[in-house]
Image (cartoon, rainbow, N blue to C red):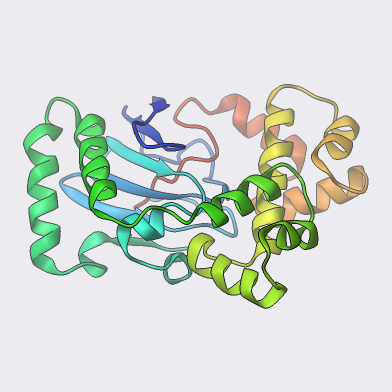
Length: 246
């Protein structure tokens, strides 16, 4: 069973997956522009930003995660998002061994009773020690998420196309055009989840027409909108934006 709640970090979500079947058994994890810090079976992992649907493997049945707002995790973890694009990695592969052991021990002490809370405490502590996320990149993500064009977003941010692309790679894992496609997908999937007719979804989410919606959903999720809706309706383990791993 999947549960989530707002985290104490601005824009972040704390989530858990528990139950008898492995994460991802019901549906793939779909791109959402986010990165996650994960806890599973005594391990700390990082889920990078996805550009395509990810089919998690097995692993232990219980997972906990903190899903950060787009662009926030690289400052907290000290790793450019582009390094982790479409990857799931042990934190031990990204940080010095001693630092990972210390953080793992800290989470493990409280994980028996509240793994999600323990992971959240660790993330809050990391955020207190790390540079704050760049507010300019937060504004970029908000503008693209609201459906503004890449050109208008760059102008509002006072960045040229190359500068915006370079900074987006480090913050989001991909350029602003890809991020805009993914955030448009998220708008569309929320409407589909609500049972909105596809023609209305296409217009409201910013697609040229319904065939454009179908092509983009298929390209980014591997499913048609109808197949996605059927999968989402049958899934009780987690929403499609979660970043569980194996």
